[in-house]
Length: 318
Ligand SMILES: [Zn+2]
Image (cartoon, rainbow, N blue to C red; front, side):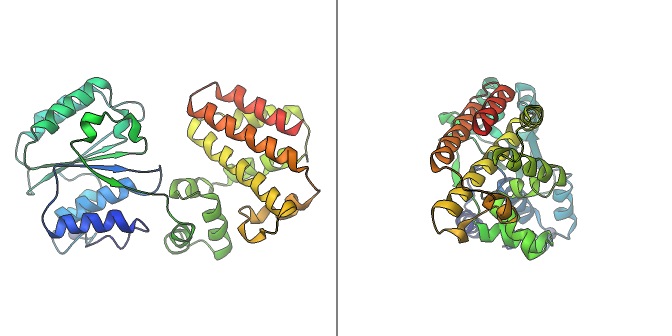
């Protein structure tokens, strides 16, 4: 089967392969796992696999190309930045009771299934209770807790874990053609997520990272700069979490450098000179880590991001 191009995730791939080989695909799958690890990519691969005109997911035939362009008549992708509402489901329901156009099956991928409103979820539940046989639903989510239990119980769950540092490294080496040094650093900063790795390829994000490191390590005490940094990192909740995890990694690196012999485990290898600058008080490192953790929780609970960021930076920099 054509899953070789997808890095990592041996277990989900094995599970899907065995379902396909035995022709035992359920009518609904739940792809659940951390963001940015390739769940949607694997769902699209599954669509290619089922629709391919040659062998499995050849990437070149008309069907594979149409899936790639999201333009296959038997593929529906339901997604939204904000929420998936009842209208989306009504439009879908008109279609799913008709036979597919070209294939034996129609595939309906919900990307970000946790964004369904309650009405939409109820409508989907009704569909899943009496599913028209030729439809395969794939619910993709990085927030499984938000999916109603009644829906989950009608899906076969395929669990995804974070990718290993090695998997991510080889992704950036082989598919993004980074040099070894850059691939190592990107993998170390990615925390098991390709999207986080891609985030760190952006020079603008790297510049903010540098400024954050300098502020945290006391190279600058300018409160104007700290306020600006707080505003910048708090712009977007997802990005803020990435920056906060970077700060955690920086503090962990400080600890490793000054209070243990774990040099090999250091993530921010490009910032080692900055980290070595002076000896940092272990108590301050621990307090700062707690502060960052606290801010991560605040962001997850949607508490005023900008204020939380500013408060955190000021209390760490002091
Ligand atoms: Zn093909």
